[in-house]
Image (cartoon, rainbow, N blue to C red; front, top):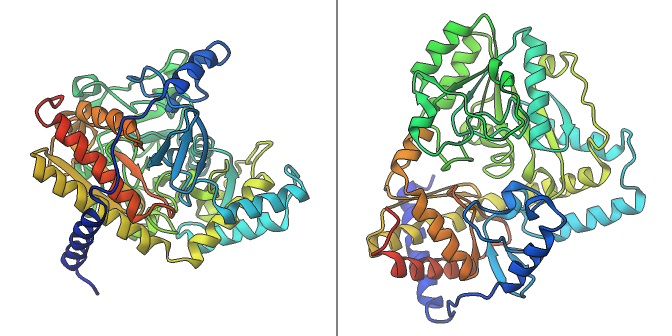
Length: 466
């Protein structure tokens, strides 16, 4: 087995090699985006807020980029600018934009019909395949989005246990439904309330507050507090839901032994353990974070990368829970096109050396950012897990939970970094330090990105937000 020190040394050598080869070969210039500005102003006349999702425009942006197309690791805006893209459609584009294998499968299925509303051979194949590659999957069910899939998982846990309360953790996002979109964000730690009994925070008007009555909020990565609450609420507690890697804020990695401890606690108290693998599924390993960490939940939810850019979500879990009497209603569930796209996506992930390649690229990015941070005196934490890279400023070690993230991370400087990177042709997710790699990213992409980062560090080292 190759040691982590050896791998890090290889990444350091490769980083120096690529910087040497590419430095000076690429100019870093600010891009003109007046076309995006004009189109956004026009779109607001017809579309609420000018965007189809709140994810499409950061709160501090005057206007978002208006894109025309994407191919591979790049996207292109209405002004003709090219961007190296690390947003990845907010997760689905693990194979990059417009992947050939998925395109072929989708075109072939269109010829056979797009919405058959029936069991098909391909649906049977996909269901079987998921039970083979996902550790917890004895049975599967389908929805169209992570929000719907988590709603279904909540119902399954309640139907199986006959109980109603569910524990979720601060800063974790499980969808936009009323009882899911609670305590997903905060401006500061004070808003979160006492650590032992956190507040229930709502994020939108029209959200029914009584939906939070059965949701218990806790800080993440704290087994001692979790056990106290589970013991206290065991008579009414149906489930604990968690992201195995807390991706929506940070991201934040589980402490060593935390996920295994979660598994032990929930098993002991006969509480259903749900892994929300909407982000981690297929991105950190073919079988998700549960395969990566070797911890098997009772239920797991997958979406985003499962179908290479097409809307599909799956709930997977133990047979007795999955068959607890909760029908999977929905007109577009397991739409034939999405099923074809998913089979093609999984086919690529199974047959090509995807994950070692992603780890290599992640290592180059991480080593490059760490080196630049040291060079320019900018404290940062950077790490990669599978195709997900973590980037935080203001600290040199990772954080333990959302409260720690709010107090230790320099979120304002990260947002400044994201804005300036966009001006130089690199797209990152705003606020969240979550960076998605794809199979289509290259060493040249990483090198160009590091040049942009160096330019930004040089411009901002004396006027950081904190």
